[in-house]
Image (cartoon, helix red, strand yellow):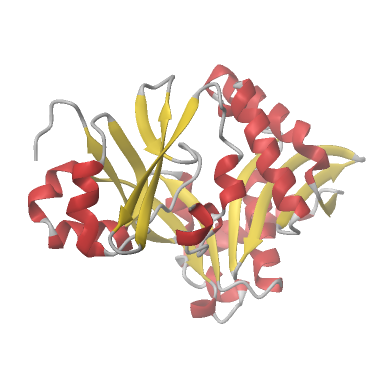
Length: 293
C-alpha cells in the first residue's frame, strides 16, 4: 500500500527510510485507506506504545510529510483518524490548502517549526552567489572563519557509513543524555537508515581529519535532485569547524548539480536561520481525546 500511494518525491517518502525506525515491539502499523470503487489513497500511521499516540509511520525523525490522497477526502480522513493522533512536520503544500478548504478543522492544525533550504538553481549553482545573499559584514566574517580552518593542516575525505561511531561519539559528548544518539534504539535506527542510503548510493559523508584522527563528520544524502544535510558532529575545541563542514556540504551539492539543499527542520532561532536560508512552514495535526470538531 505504501509503494502504491507514496509519491516518492522526497527522501522521507521512501519505505525503507521510514521502516528504519520501526520496532515491532513498540509500533503497530495503522493505515487508513480511502476506497470507493477503487483505492484512492492512504494515511500511513503507527501506534506508538511508548508515547501512547498515533504518529505518521516513521516517527519523529522523518519529516516533510504530505497527504497521499486528494484534498476532497481530507474531512473523511480526519473523521477516521483515531483520537490520540499527532502528526508532525506536515509541509505547507498539504496543510495550508486543507485549512482553507476545511476551516472548521483549522483548530486541529497548528504552525510549528520551519524547513530550511537553499535553492541552488536560483543561485545559478554558485557558492559565491550564495555568499552574496549575506550582508557585507556577515560575508567578511564568514570568509575569515572558513580561512582559519583551511589554514589548519587537515584532510577532507568522502566516505560511506564506516565512521558512524564517530558521529555518535561527538554528539553524545556534546549533548550527553539530551542527545538522541544516547538512545540505543534511535542510534540503531539511524545506523540502519545510513546503511540503506549507502547501499542505494545516496549517502554523502564528509570526514575532517587532523593527523589521521577524525575531528568532524557530516552526513548527507542525495535523492532526486535534492541534497539532504542530515546529521553531523565535531570536536568543539576546533572553532568554526561546524561552519566549515556545512560549507563543504554546500559545495558538494553544487558539484552534484543539486537543485536544492534541504537542511531539515529547525526552530525560528536555530543556527540555520543565521545562514540566510529560505524557509517553509511546517504544521502539526493533533486530534486529542477531548477535542471535538
